[in-house]
Amino acid sequence: MVKRNEIKQSLKLFIVLSRAYKAISEDVNEFIQEQGLNPTEFAVLELLFHKGPQPLQQIGNKILLASGSITYVVDKLEKKKLLKRVSCPKDRRVTYAEISEEGKNFIEDIFPQHERNIHQLMNVLSNEEKDEVIRLLKKLGLSIKNLSY
Image (cartoon, one colour):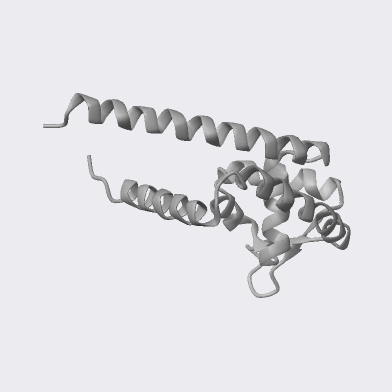
């Protein structure tokens, strides 16, 4: 039988983790919005910048977004001339999102500051502590996939 104090500790961990994520996310999102993007638009641009052209159908899974929202986000980025749609020459059913030259210049300009901001937020932890947090959060995330109810 699970002890009550163990349950309370798990709830406290959940609250602390949620609050930390919220604080970090709000700070990062503020910078992104100052650049004229919303966090989802930034995530799509960052994906295309680092991973190259992506099928529209797969972008949602890679940035943890519902597939129905991808078309809307891609439309907005296309209007801003930060990406373009490219038809697959081998399969007409597939369309790729590809970062435009303007989008590449834009992300190259702002990404170093984005990295520095994240580093500054995380720098309260030592490198060893960061490694430990990464290890523990991976353990937590992977264990949840294996739970059966």
